View 1 (cartoon, rainbow, N blue to C red):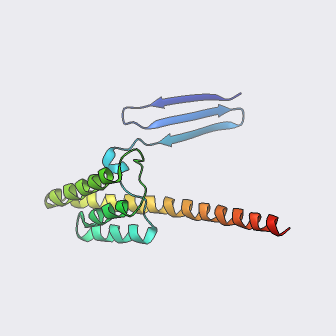
View 2 (tube, rainbow, N blue to C red; view 1 turned 45 degrees about the vertical axis):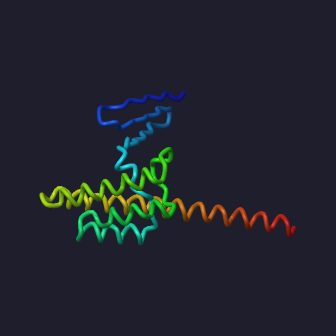
View 3 (cartoon, helix red, strand yellow; view 1 turned 90 degrees about the vertical axis):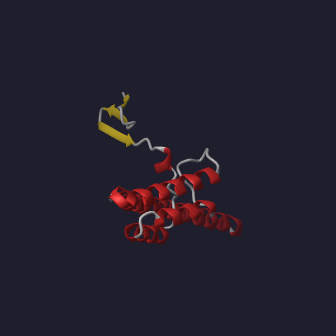
Length: 147
C-alpha cells in the first residue's frame, strides 16, 4: 500500500513523500521566480564562458546568455514568448551591473553564472541521453528494414 503526502512551505518548495512497505521516497522541487526561470539551458562551454564573464565583468555573461534565448535556447518559462524571456535576462544583467557598485550585483552575477553551469550540465546530460535514444531508434529501424 502506497501513501502519498504533499506539502508546500512558505518558500514555495514542494516536498512529496511516498511511503510504501519497502521505504520512503522524498522528492523536493523548487519553485523558481520569473528571473531565475528565465536563465537559458545552454551548451556547457557557453555556460562556462558566461560564468567567466560574470566573474570578471558583472552582468556581461548574463547579457550574453540573453542572446542565446534568441538563438533557441530553452528556459523554464515555456509559456512566455522568446522576446519576453530575452528582456527578462537583459533586466537581470542590468540589475547586476547597477548593483555591482555595492558588491551585491557582483555576487549575484557569480551565482547567476554558477546557475548557468548547473543548468548546462543537466542540459548536456539530457541532450546526450536523448541523442543516444534517437540513434538507437534509428539503428533498430534500419535493422528491421534490412532483416
